[in-house]
Length: 103
Picture (cartoon, helix red, strand yellow):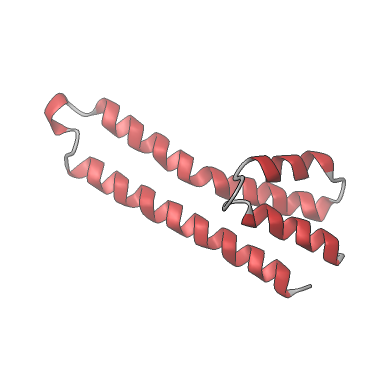
């Protein structure tokens, strides 16, 4: 892959810091290169992971009885959500650095 394409692909992963959805979507639709699109799609999916876990938290919160909102189940879902978000964030940074190291 050409160095400019690697830079754009790394930008898709680093966009978790500044524009989590916008940059990978624009790259996916604007650039014809298949390899850059592949990285943009992976970055977009990894940016969606924290929001999927947030949806899980909302489901647990809405289905809990009135007094049990902060019960153990909610705490476990919060912990899982935090861990998934942290792993996704670190994974994006690592993948971006890996692409930049190949320049």
